[in-house]
Structures are given as C-alpha cells and as structure tokens.
Image (cartoon, rainbow, N blue to C red):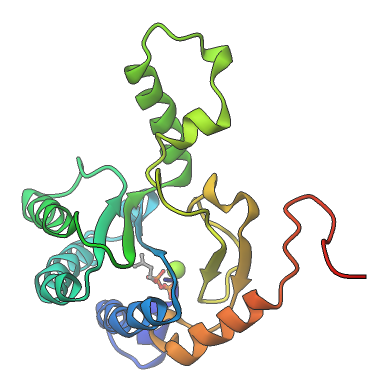
Amino acid sequence: MDGNGRWAQQRHMPRKLGHYQGAARVRGLIAHCAQVGVKSVTLFAFSTENWHRPSDEVDALMLLFIDYLDKELPLMLAEQVRFRVLGSLARFSPAVRERIEFAQTQSQHNTGLMLNVAANYGGRWDIVHAVQQWHVAHPTAYVGALTEEDLSHYLSTAGQPELDLLIRTGGESRISNFLLWQAAYAELYFTDTLWPDFDEAELQKAFVWFAARDRRFGGVTVSAP
Ligand code: IPE
Ligand code: MG
C-alpha cells in the first residue's frame, strides 16, 4: 500500500492524513475482493524497515492501526472475515498487541475471506522464522532432509492458498521484502496510482490484467491447438 505520504504532500497535508486516507480505502477493496471470490488478501501495512521512519510518523501509524481495528472489527465479524497479522508482534505496544490478538481470536472461526495484515513483517524474516519454527518442532531432524513443502507449513501464510497476484501501488517496481517465498510464481502488477487513489475500479483493472496472463509455472502453455 505505497504512496500515502506523496498523496498527502501533493495536497500540502501532513503525511499522516495520507495514511488515514489510505486506510479508508481498505474496506471497499476487501468487499470487492470478497464479491469476486478472492479467498485471501494480504495488505503490507508496516515493514520491519518502517520502524526507521521519524517517531511521530511511526506513532501515527500505530494509532491508526488501533483506530482501524476498533472501527473495522465489528464489520469484519459481520462479513465473516478471518483476520490475521503476519509478522512478529513482539515489538508492538501492549495496546496494539491486545487489539491484534483480540481481533484474531474473535475472527478465527469465520468462514469468509482471509484478511492478512503484514505488520512488522519482512519476507526474509518469514523464511528464517519458518526454519527456526521447523527446528523447534523437529529438534533432532536432519536439516538436509528439509523440503520446500516442509518449510511452507511454518511460513506465516501456512494453510493459505498460493499467492496469485501481487499489486504494488505508488510507482515503484520492487517487492521490498514483502512475501518473498510466496511470490515465487505470483503475477506482479505495478501501478503508478498512489494507494489512497487505488479504488475498486483500479483493483478491477488489476484483476482484468491478471486474467489475461498466461500462467505456465515454468512449463509450456497448455492450450488447444
Ligand atoms: C504507505 O505509503 C506505506 C506505509 C508504510 C504505511 P508511504 O508512507 O510509503 O508513502 P510514500 O511512498 O512516502 O508516498
Ligand atoms: Mg513509500
């Protein structure tokens, strides 16, 4: 969800307002995803590198996170959304952590769309953490026998469908330590649109683009002659 700061700066507003505007986009986009049958969505809200931002911006993002969960949880529950945070919760304040844990517990048996929010998340962290967790579960196992399939059970996205489409807004053409493992065969969609301007019509454009991709997964096209 990139481009909140620039969106605000273009309007001579504090960056914080761009983040609020960006967060306000999420509800409609999630509803659109659920409507077209998307099973799982992951929003990159806060990376492990984002802690390096000025402390007033980090504080504003934490308050926004709290505000978002307080406002949106009842709606998510009503819509059967299953909410999860991907990332280590250790660095968050108790106020943030409690809300995350509450939202996860309250929504864990929901049967609708899975909404993952990557927060204090890094793709490299995810892979290293998975190896560590695998080792905790199999302390005497021979590491040489570890397979991709084994490791996938310990990633933050374990049990979720394969990542099909990765969208980055805000004009950059990089993955920036998002779902590195999971993006192995994802289609990558880059748009200059700033996140607060990324509405349902923009999302639908990405879906239409995705639908026209020829996905071979390293094989050859299987199509009628
Ligand atoms: C949002 O956009 C990303 C978050 C960390 C929430 P940015 O804050 O990166 O916006 P730009 O790139 O400065 O425009
Ligand atoms: Mg940015």
